[in-house]
Length: 342
Image (cartoon, rainbow, N blue to C red; front, side, top):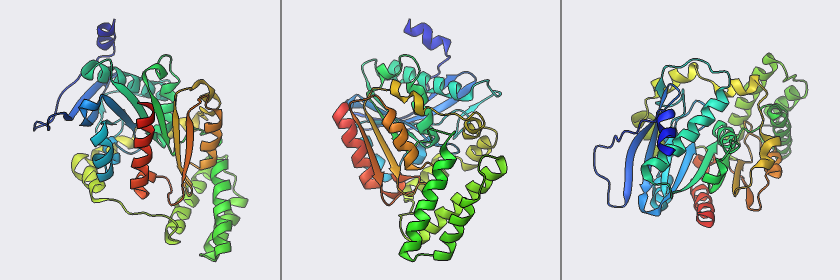
């Protein structure tokens, strides 16, 4: 039955490493062919652990964007990490039009990836799933598909954009709250007061208002960085993955024609009220200054999860990418979660 399923979804597995890895380690690229798309998954780490962490990147990004020095030194040393380029993102290829339900199709891509990993590395492997931003929404949607939770030992949601219906209200409330705090600290008072006042009268329910809000989000990101409330550095390894391992021109060109967040917004997509169907262990991580995916939205979703083993962590020096801004703490938290439930 498994073989028939693999044939039905047209899975193609190809090894693409030029040098043999050290004994017990895996260092290769496999491709998942599903519904007109060829999607690379970069597989790195400790194969002897029999534990795999699937990572799902945010919109307009790519799988290897996660692969910092910390990921390699901590996470890949203890298990295998799978960096997946989603349909229409990263280095994924294919000829496909616009489906009736883009999010459902992309969730089925992830389910196909799970099948590939089990087929190639063994039915008994232990799987965890981690999604960032849009990837948080995609990973949650995948877990809501029949039978998927039974195959996953834990879900890690990092700055997940889980509710496109209510996200703008949460963005406005958080920025106004932070603006008031920064004014009271005496930091860039005029600029933060301007942010607060413009948000007070903004109608974010229209397309124009939404675009204006996104502009204010970008402005607030710059202000909070200038106030030195966050760490904004990007590691050398991150730059290498972006420029050398991933073609930035291909990845950005593809994203021009494939915008899943826009699709989700147009359809007021939200999984918050469905999360009572998720019962596996969960770890939620959000940045205190994340104006893109505000932590209150994450807290609402977290409250709905029907799991006895769930945890919510706030990173006090982060915006939308805590795995960049607080790398060491992040990898320790991920590793401890996996160790508890593997």
